[in-house]
Amino acid sequence: MVVENKTDVFSFILLGFSSVPRLHPLLFTILFLVYIVILLSNGLIVAIINANKSLHTPMYFFLVHLSCLEICYTSVTTPKMLENLLVKPTTISFMGCAAQLFFFLFFGVSECFLLASMSFDRYVAICRPLTYHIIMNKKFCLKLVIMSWFCGSAVALGHTTLMFNLPFCGIAINHFFCEIQPLFELACGNTFLYEIQVIAVAVLAVMMPFWMIILSYSCILITIVKMPLSHNRQKAFSTCSSHLLVVTLFYGTAGFMYLRPKSSYVPSIDKLLSLFYAIVTPLLNPIIYSLRNKELKGALCKLWKKCISH
Image (tube, rainbow, N blue to C red; front, side, top):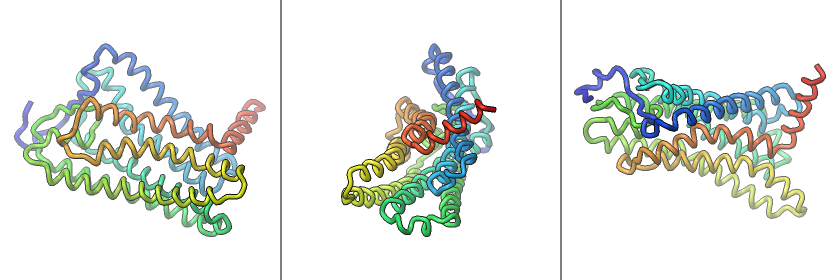
């Protein structure tokens, strides 16, 4: 179906996993279970930290916001993906598609800057421990979180406005949710300048916090190497390794998706990439933090014993 003007587009069709119809029951079961685990695990982290006063520190303050972001981030796309596996064809309204793209970018970019804030927190804790509580006070931590949300909203608003002011010559999105690259495939005419704008903003929104993280961890590594005792090094490495692993997973897939032109778009590969950073990373975050964090595991055990006693 071809339309002549973007104002004629009232809804889109999400093709999703239409190429593998036999796998739909299996995919639905897996995605549904993963989604439930993401909601419960991230929600549990928020509950544990809020219930335990000893965890009311800057590191866990950022972790609470990260868990909330993961819940919202996953909830933007997963319900529609599950619907795509049950309903044929899956449609989404023009405004619904715009809203989905906006919130997906909003929570995703906010997470980029929040991860950078968390790396700065680890830098101050390890490299400047004597001034840690002075620098990372409640007011400053709150400013970092607000800045993350502000950057996310600015990028999401700019990209969404840009994309949905383009004229579309088709309505079938070869993806399981409204993503920038598949939408570019439907745009009429030459979109080169728009692609450059998207890449330029992606460099600022993705690469700038990424390099901030690299700089923080470079300083942390230098400080760790200079530590006289091996157990101090091991403790510092353990503290930061979980955060660094999350960063690598998130930025690796997101960067590959957005820092390239439309001509290199391959639907099958990009669907896997989108599935990875939309589902897998939010699933791994609570697992990585809970398994590698003794304080969080201790608080979980206390909460579990308290629940059993009641």
